[in-house]
Length: 117
Ligand SMILES: Nc1nc2c(c(=O)[nH]1)N=C([C@H](O)[C@@H](O)CO)CN2
Image (cartoon, rainbow, N blue to C red):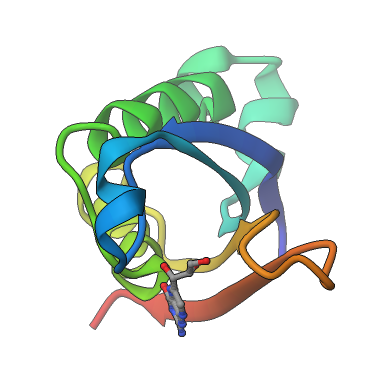
């Protein structure tokens, strides 16, 4: 399966369950694996057939910084829903990491996979 990838997309936003977290911005790092037929774009070297990782990244930054969110699970689900619905991606794997959330860990996070129904 062909994929388009985004690694460590940095999103600074209001994220967390505790009161002190609702007053600051924290960093999330997002990894995306998006199923896509890359052969079609490569065949004619045609951008119009490519899944633009820049467009997707900018949309996700806008989406996730729109309002405060408590759980990184919610972030992952919002991203998957957006990518499937707005970019016609048939399958997506989303990893959301929150570095610094647990002092003794480099990062903590969640990972989900979602498909078109
Ligand atoms: N499964 C989760 N556990 C926790 C989350 C979360 O989003 N998903 N969030 C927190 C706090 O916001 C934490 O990150 C503060 O350091 C705790 N557990």
